[in-house]
Length: 154
Image (cartoon, rainbow, N blue to C red):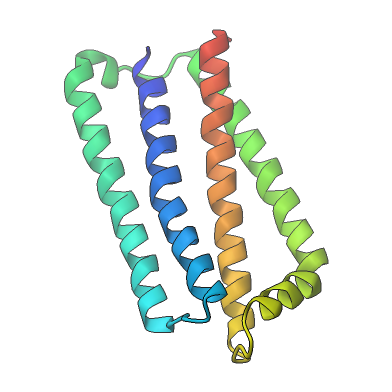
């Protein structure tokens, strides 16, 4: 397995684990009517910190174990695979953002049904987390597309 493919697998795993933890906790707090803005802000900062630290540690570990391959510039095949990944991430992000713009009233209604009496300040929180989820999904689409391309050998 190529160094860049190993990096993609590690990035995908850490993204799913860390952001999965964050969104699971956010949805659980909202649904149980125990949303605490300070606690959720702390969880968000924790997720950001963890994703950065975990990705750096994994990159260092893989670079040390891969030797010279880690320093080698990307060849044309790897550059093409990266472009396919960025393209799929862009389309995923664009589609989700457009869907959010169109469905915002419906999503807010569902969110308000989850909580008995949410404060008015929850609307930006819901939309901010929906947009954050769009970014995370786009990153997942990028990694999955590239992994599939690496596995196909294209």
